[in-house]
Length: 379
Image (tube, rainbow, N blue to C red; front, side, top):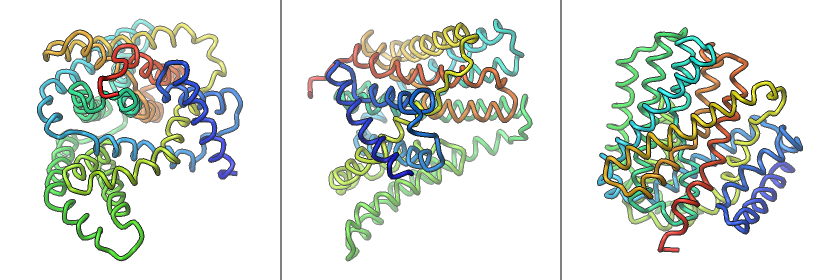
């Protein structure tokens, strides 16, 4: 019964998060680990059902929406060059090392390229929550990280489409694919400037309960759906929805109303869902494969993105923190892995190990960020 699952997820994540903080780690780490514990891999209390997936998707959309609300647009624009270098470095190095590792294990050129692309994906949802807890989300490092994540998503999607058009069964038009990205950003910018403020002003005057909250959620999920329909991650759409609303006078009220809904119900399902995809069945013979690709996944982003940050002028500590923040592959890599399985570019026997690698990168990110950044001066 799903109502019981709600009880279990909320109770488990809050207690695990509290314990994690008491042990000196970000609460998000405990929430992800408890997802593995109560999921199919261990206790089996929570199954990866459709409704759990839907709650999880809403959770991560709202999480990135809140990140957008808290983002300083001028800082994001000021750090765009650094964000590009971080994104490019965090794509090139994982592709090269992922390709080399795959060739070493005897995979074909097409499969090796696909795994390289899989390892080049980034999902900063976990990093966003961790940086928020540590007080670094509104810093120059946080802005660069968010900008790099947006660029990473776009570049990897384009490269993935190119690869699948050559090696898979897809007949993707690269011109149309790039065109859709241009259309997305053009429309998002125009709507953010001309439509969003007027829409919120109009909605705030409606004689119904919490009209402003409803208007903000309409914008959030509308942007997310629009992004998804054009082949861009829904979280990128919700992130830009947050940025659009952050430029209006309604920002603080909306943030105060959305945060309890997000963190009180939906975001815990996102954290738990990461652990639900883990299975330990039959991995004994693949342990070294998992170790090798986990090291490749961890080091390639840390070095590649960190090097990009260093080249753009960040200190060694900040560069290491940005590199660590880009490590988590999260839900983006899980989606790419499923696509690879369907298109036969990811061998079935590599699917579970890659899922475990993705989870390991997600687990590693919060303690790495905590160790490098610690608490900011604003805390």
